[in-house]
Image (cartoon, rainbow, N blue to C red; front, side, top):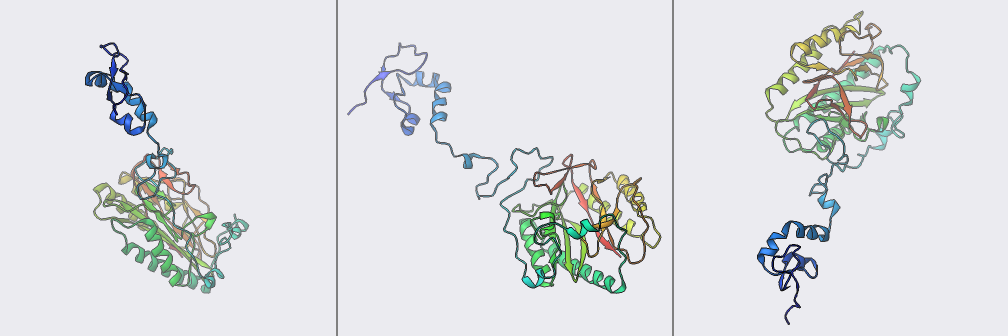
Length: 368
């Protein structure tokens, strides 16, 4: 049975809107009735306004159409955030990794509620001086942390995700009977920092405290892996920045500068040395190599507490108080940027990134 003829639907039909039988095929598929034209000329001439009907009638799939959601189900939870660089978070995060009960029984006080109560109680007190026995415990946990960091570093390659590196750090930490210090510290969700877990991960413009996720490392990235272990009542903290495959000359210069800043600062460490003098050595090295020193974060005391006095600024003309004494333990961990020293945070309230999107590198050691 033939279709019933209806007037040409063109708004400016030159033929006077005669009965027409040429139906728009797209309208037919979408179930839109009455889209008939008297000929191809009328159909083409009216196309720009007519296709609006197709857009209005086409079923929408918000999740599939969202540019922040990938075809494999991963997504960027902060799609409206104005990122400073090219790195984007790739969620969902993996579930919180399990820790055996025998390790939890000896874990820090924040393991359940995320609140480091002991740090608050001792805030502002002079730096703790370790006994000989305590010093040996610090040496041992730092040695174990180095082992874990080296294991994680060996896994760095294009294609591995930062969450997979986090799993490596977590498992290596547990195998050594230790607790991954970052896990649940102030509610941090992972075992390490990449940059920070017992790893945190920081890639490219991420300065520190990045959360390991589903993002795959790419050739040319640089990644900081920050490992902290807690064993026998003490924390050991260190980190390094690694190239992923071949990286550009600026990234090499940045990493070499960050390493030199740390090494030269360590040379100053001895009883009686001023804490504030470390920054006087670090910042000139950074400036000579066209880099800047992050001022928002600093090194810190570390012992039976994850973070405590003394504060260790890495920039010149700082007003840090105190001198180094035998038995004192603290970190030196200069964060060096290719661009400006300032930073901002992602909406996860952890990930610190450079304000201009340029790359950052960091190396850290615990000093006794």
